[in-house]
Length: 356
Image 1 (spheres, rainbow, N blue to C red):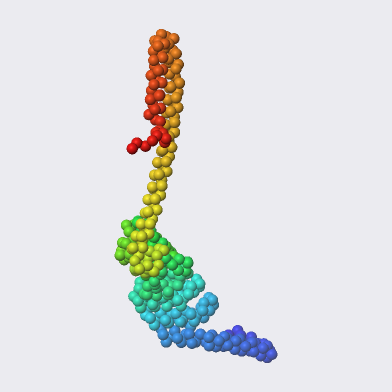
Image 2: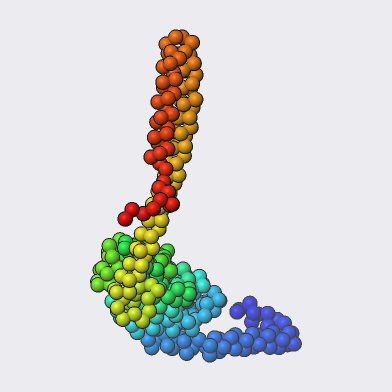
């Protein structure tokens, strides 16, 4: 300053006037900037002071220089302080710079604090940055959600299952789940829960001896499915599985389902027995044809054997083992036998008078 006044004293009056104007202009500019900053951040700073948010005026200005919306940070910090939550301002600023939803995170922290849930700011930030709605997750933990199984949005209203007795059944279940805040990052989604529950219901009905067991005690199916820990490695915890609807496939508006099924079963059994009888008849016909073929084959063998008889006689005559008279006696016996056989096989004549 001493050098400045020395320069002004030594310089001409015109130079001193110019410098004075410049200094006044700079001072006015500085005052305008300060007034603008006070006008822009005074209300936020006053809110921080009156609510003990712990955010200073200089920090508010630095937020704008860091491309951070100070109003979002201030309002979130005030909400946390009013809810008696200790959340560092740096954590909120870092989450904002990371592209997270600061307001939703703080709202989720307040909801979790009121519900006495073990949710930390780091877990809430991680859930939000993972693309999940952290506030909705907290609300889902406090108020569990009901999921239809199967999902009607996929065009399927019922699960198809078949009991051991061959009866096809239609099942609809409702799964009550709540969010698992610890497994929400990296855990499987609702589609996995629906698929696992559907698979468990189909397996449980398939292991039932009869459809009557399922109709008599549907709760047994839900308990069996619930005992399989289907919520492992998922972002949810299964609270309950309830069978909403169970019916026999293909039967509608029947007064007596049991009688109708028994009638259909009897008709099916009749068709099966007829098919089995037809199969046995075909086997008998084939066996008969096989026997006929064997008879013809044996007859052919007999004809071949009879053809060797004259040759045997000729050999016996040449060898002197059979005389000529013996041969003719044998021929006479054969002729007499053929005549007696022909007489015995001759049918009675229609022209013979009836005996009275």
